[in-house]
Figure 1 (cartoon, rainbow, N blue to C red):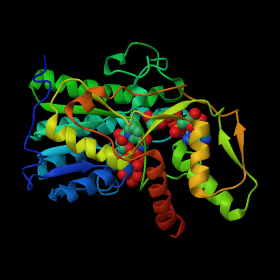
Figure 2 (figure 1 turned 90 degrees about the vertical axis):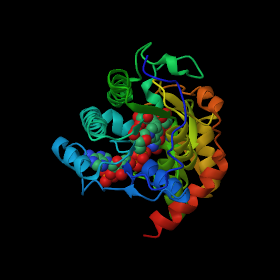
Figure 3 (figure 1 turned 90 degrees about the horizontal axis):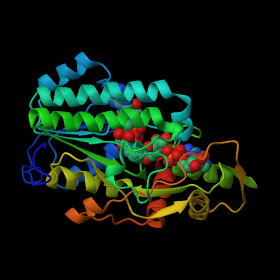
Length: 323
Ligand SMILES: NC(=O)C1=CN([C@@H]2O[C@H](COP(=O)(O)OP(=O)(O)OC[C@H]3O[C@@H](n4cnc5c(N)ncnc54)[C@H](OP(=O)(O)O)[C@@H]3O)[C@@H](O)[C@H]2O)C=CC1
Ligand SMILES: C[C@H]1O[C@H](OP(=O)(O)OP(=O)(O)OC[C@H]2O[C@@H](n3cnc4c(=O)[nH]c(N)nc43)[C@H](O)[C@@H]2O)[C@@H](O)[C@@H](O)C1=O
């Protein structure tokens, strides 16, 4: 069903191939652009959100009709941390369904050779077996704080599968774990935990505050992957994988939120105390992904959490604080 499980394409050999990276200004999109350029793949089609709103179906279709990219990497989405997901459920389901439906369908209709859709580890049931294998999808209830976003992401996987089955079209899906790195969103409430804590510890260090508030109990476990490792995996998948099944992309290493907070505190150099605000949700207790299928194809993550944090803090100071 749905063609071969994997084979190789000419993605890396045809240096003139036209590639559309949707969401190129974001954390993931910008890392993918850096990676493609470093490999000599420079015929990139890029549009900012203000140039092309991907929720507008006719604008998206006109763009694809005019540009006809050969490859499409879909890294545009409505993205946020636990608070944003919990507060704006309508935006997270509607905007994501609109973007992905428009981009996937227009890519197919205007002759793209291959498309990669990015989901998230939140697609899996809240109490999935750990580490989570790909076939845990749709086996139980979702984590309530992000079920709207998760339902949109599950629809994206299913849409890629449906187009492969019906049209034999090469649409694949990668499910990244929690990501971080340069160009992350450092918003105090709406961002993910790692950039939120980096900013809070930095501001507390500068203002010589005695304590920093961290949300929840500190006990949830999370798996973090540097976005440059994810970009490497995206290129690897575009080049080497053409299967029906979505593939997990993780580091295989998990930490508690308390351990993460202590590590960020150390990297930033804040010397005060942590205070836990247990009125804030913990979210899912644990979501370590089983990435053995991708590892089995030959991909490996390279950046440790400590090195990645040092690199990200340097970027934050040079690009966010100094602006
Ligand atoms: N960050 C993470 O921890 C994880 C991310 N992912 C997935 O990776 C992908 C990228 O996420 P990430 O880079 O973190 O998110 P970002 O928010 O950093 O980037 C998303 C990009 O999409 C653009 N965008 C959003 N809405 C529209 C729109 N309507 N039209 C055009 N462009 C739009 C944004 O532009 P603008 O900012 O101008 O709106 C931005 O450039 C997503 O699919 C996400 O689900 C998966 C797992 C974890
Ligand atoms: C990638 C993934 O990201 C989201 O899921 P999440 O992993 O729960 O996201 P998070 O990074 O926001 O929180 C991780 C943990 O950290 C704790 N926590 C402590 N202090 C802060 C804090 O200051 N901010 C945030 N955001 N969290 C904090 C927080 O309470 C939670 O226990 C999905 O909605 C969805 O977007 C998705 O797919």
